[in-house]
Structure formats: C-alpha cells, structure tokens
Image (tube, rainbow, N blue to C red; front, side, top):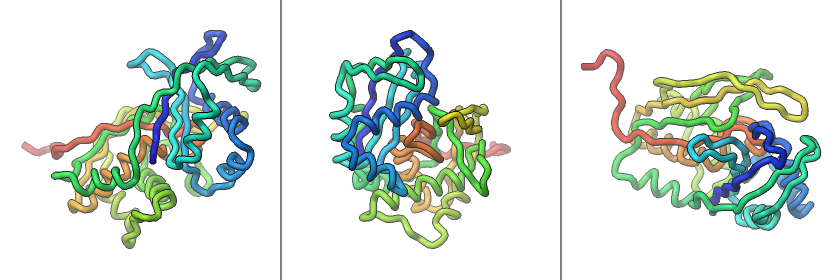
Amino acid sequence: MIRLIEIPVALSDGAHIHPSMGSVLHGALMERIPPELAEQLHGASVRPYRQSIFFDRERGEALWQITSCDDRVTEAFREALPAGLSLELRQKDSILELGKPVLAAETSFEALADQAFGAADAPRGAQVFFDTPTSFKRAGSYVIFPDTLLIFQSLLLRWNALCPSIRLEEENITEKLASSAQLSRYNMHSAVFSVEGVRITCFAGSAHLRFHGTDAVRRILGLLISFAPYIGIGIKTALGMGAVHIAFQERREPVAGEA
C-alpha cells in the first residue's frame, strides 16, 4: 500500500519552520529505524518513500509529511514516531515536538492505475502546487523551472522502479508525455534549499499543465501526476524537496485566441 502520514509539529522555542529542516529530520528519522533497514534505504537507487516539512497556511500549522510505498518501511516509520515524541535536533540546537500522526491518504499502485485508465474521461490538465522547494539536475547544473520533460521523467522512473507489475515502457514514452503536457500558466518564484551547508537553487509556487494528445497519453499523464503527491518531483525528495499536491482539470482549457 501507499500511505501518506501527516504529523503536526512545532519547535519548542517557537522558531519558524523552514522546509530545509527536512534534511535534518531525515537524519533523525533514519536514526530511529532499524539500522539494517536504514542502510538498505540509503543504498536504494530509487527510495520507496519521501518526507518533507512545511507550514500549511490553510491549516495554520507546520506539518511533517512522510509517505511510503512499502508496508515494511511504513511500519518502521510509524514505530519510530509515536505521538507526543520530542525529537532533539542537534544540528539546530532545538527540540521538535510531534503531535498525533494522521493517515492523510492511502491508496495502491493498482488503485491509481484503475482510476486513471478506468475513468469515463481522461484529464485535460492539472495544477501542481510545489509545497517545498523543487529542482532538477541536468548536465551538472540545477534546473530552476518546471520543465515538463524532467517532471515526467522523474515520475516515470519512480513509478517503473517501484511498481514492476504495471510498467509504462512504450518506446520514447518520456518524450511523448512531455510533448503532450504544456505549461499553460504559472505562479513561480525562486527558492533555496540547504543540505549540510550546500545551498541548492530551486523553484516554488504553482504551475498549470494542459494535457493534449491521445486519450491513452492523457491517462498516463494523469496517472503519473496523481502519483506525484506520494513520491515527490525532482531531486532529493527523501530529504524534503519536491513535495507537491495537485488539482485535476477535467474540461479542456481554452487556448488563447479562441472565441
């Protein structure tokens, strides 16, 4: 099963929560799970989880989100983070107080696929909200804009690695998906995410993607975008980057110049 857990958190000194704390929290989480599992996850080419921390303005509280696509990993995380736990963040010289963990969403690869391919209509687009700083790396440089090729390349790689029973392997599929997803509007700004003193240039905000092409292509685009909130987009999602939530568009978006 794929599960998304949310934990309300606060620093004991009342300090501001910043998404870059995700790197510190990842270290604290790995210290609290069995060492052999931590070592296995560290060595995985595609990690079956993501985690991030950010302030949710609508709810007025800071949230630690942890998502896992592996039952064993989910159970280890749950045991490591009981309600009322206080985590000492040595790097920040502070204490993080944890509220009650809540199962915010639960699904499976099969359910996501059934929803995408069994729906009456294929989606016409989606709005992607980047909750924590997001970036990609290409040719040794950071990409600080939501490039559709890199978005779907990232999601496709993770889907195929974590769900071998429903692989998406059509020839040139990444290029076909990217050419069928158009960035139609956005509200973006640059951001910075710090990992062990290294500042990574990123982007944050929201982007609207318009889907076109065949019915089958739009369904695959919808499937991968629906997977994004569980696995994240871009680099270092295990350390707190690339957390997103989405909203689908079911009707065709008007093209500029149309009556």
